[in-house]
Amino acid sequence: MRAGGTSEFRLRDLLSFRWAAIAVILVAWFVYYPIVDNFIVSTTDEDIFTGEVTQVGLANYQRLLDDPVVWVALWNNFVYAAISIVFQVFGAFLLAAMIEGLDSERLRRFWRAVYFIPSAISITITGLLFYFIYQPAIGLLDGVLKASGLETLMRPWLGDEGTAIYAIIAMSQWQGFGYSTLLFAVAIQKIPRELYDAAIIDGAGPLRRLWNVTFPLTREMTGLMTIITVTGAFQVFNEVMVMTAGGPNNSSQVLGTWLYQQGFTENNFGYGAAIAAVIFAVTMLTGTAQLIYTRRRRVQL
Amino acid sequence: MSAAVLAEAPPAPVNVWSVIARTFLHAFLICLGIVVLYPLLWMAMNGFKNNAQIFGDPFALPLTWSWSNYVEAWNRGVRDYLTVSILVTVASALCTVLVSAWAAYGLTRTKMPSKPLVVGFVLGGLMLSPTVAVIPLVKMMQALGLYNTYWALIVLYTAFRIPFCTFLIRAYMLDLPRDVDEAAVIDGATEGQIFWKITMPLCRPIIVSCIILHVLFAWNEYLFAMIFSGATGMQTLPVGLTSIMAKHGTNYGIVFAAMTISALPIVIVFFAAQRYFIRGLSEGIGK
Picture 1 (spheres, rainbow over the protein chains, first blue to last red):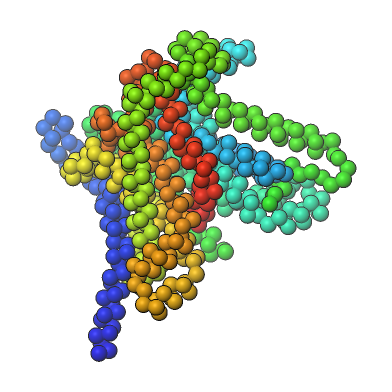
Picture 2 (cartoon, chains in turn green, blue):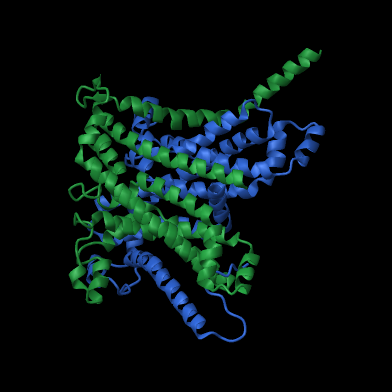
């Protein structure tokens, strides 16, 4: 009787797996398995015409090291990350502090919403929009420069090897800063009001309060945003694809677009998979950093 | 609840410097607002213009407020792309939220063995990016016969968003009081009844946040959409826009009109559901 009871209980415990079954299966099948498979594909070479697959070991990785475009792409991803940290982490923090310092709640809500709008819109749309804005001579940017007497600065922003990637990054900042501003604003709202009152009594001016109260108390958010921004910068694809597709002359290539070009335009599945492995390595690093960071924080709490 | 950070009205004597600082602050916010909004207004406005007006006089208001470009864009593809986008977004949002809520319930309310392992497995998916999986997924979808069907996108959007959604709902369920559940168990309710009648209604706020964040993701996603719905008649809005650009690239008014129509729904969703949006974003990043 008793034994029967326990085994019934065990069966019931096992049956509770059914709740998570679909989630586990879908994630294992479509998220984990392809990543494992990607490493297998990256050690092969497929002949486009015969469809014959040959094992090539680490040859695709050797090719990575010798491919100058990979280094250009890595550098562009790095610049992407660095500029995004300046604008979307520190710039967004300052902006959020300014907004949260406003007296009127309606104004605060208004500005948070306005700055967020571009983040809600698809990158494909903003990418196309800026493609037109950057058009030489007839685009909006050159129009503004012309109207303000800065004709010497006018150039084909996306057609110039020196400016293409920066023009794309600039669009990306325009689109993304409102998103991180919103998150910083939420973090700032959680700071107890008394700390500011105490600082005011101590005679701290606005800048002192910003530096001694707001900044230290949102440091967690700053850390998280930095990691998320870097992860995002190494996965960037959409805006580059829409605006330049990596051109001119591969100068604005990032890892994501180079992967696409190798894998899908030139049908080098094996080599594309090797490029994907590089993205995997970088995002794993930043992901682990994020995990350690949140773990440590939770222990402190 | 104002967190006085930069500009704060000082008590009693009006400080000249503080007035100046406040003026600059407001001026700065307004300028930034113009930088953000003007390109979007320019986009919507160009939908009313023809090529000569768009490029000849970029700052001018349209000469006539004719909707012909918008109608043209709608008829030449936007309607179909919009249908596909709505279908894929709604279907994948429902699947994701349902599957994630089930998983979260199992992980917080049942005696499932080795829970930490399952939690680690599902949430570990957060670290894996679609870009890395895309080449094997193409082969897989071809083998499954899902290549160039809506199903490929619905399945992938669901699978890739389950970790994040489960994470949000699980965290919410952990904070929910359990006494109602326990009372229901004593009354003889099954797990299924508790899930549908007690837990899900209590989780409504986070479910709404999840749905909205999913809509934002699925509506705007490009990489998977481009690769798995490239065929005509299957394209979602972002992919369709690039093909409108390729087809009618010389008639810019139509392209701008199509872009504006595509951007509008999501902006409206954002304004209508801002509260849930912000909750989802801040919970998602903060825990």
